[in-house]
Image (cartoon, rainbow, N blue to C red; front, side, top):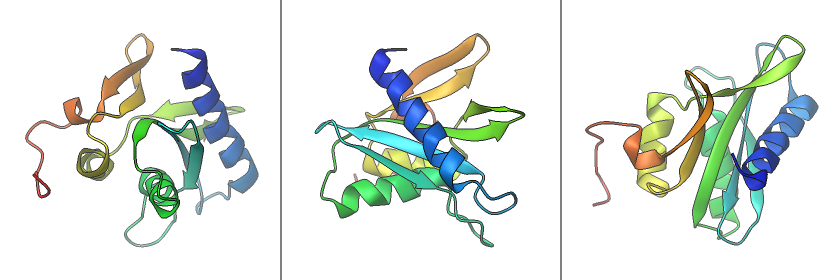
Length: 128
């Protein structure tokens, strides 16, 4: 991971530290765009989500900052935080909005990075 990747994880952790509510807001995401700006989001606990990643994506899009380069999601784990892989719905959203974005995710040997489009085989390509 690069220093920029570590900074992105830190923003996600800081966001969750400020907004964490057990059973309500338990996941945070942070993304970086080509402009260098970082946008964060938290999950919204309702009957159908949304997860933290689309909330962060919405924040970037709302600010007309559409060139998403990297994204990460975290949750609390004991006294610390852990990086989470995106769920299937979030993988599809990333393919729709940022297929070439780097996703920081856990792997068998720590953290890894992959392009969003490589994380979901056979995606629905509604915008193609």
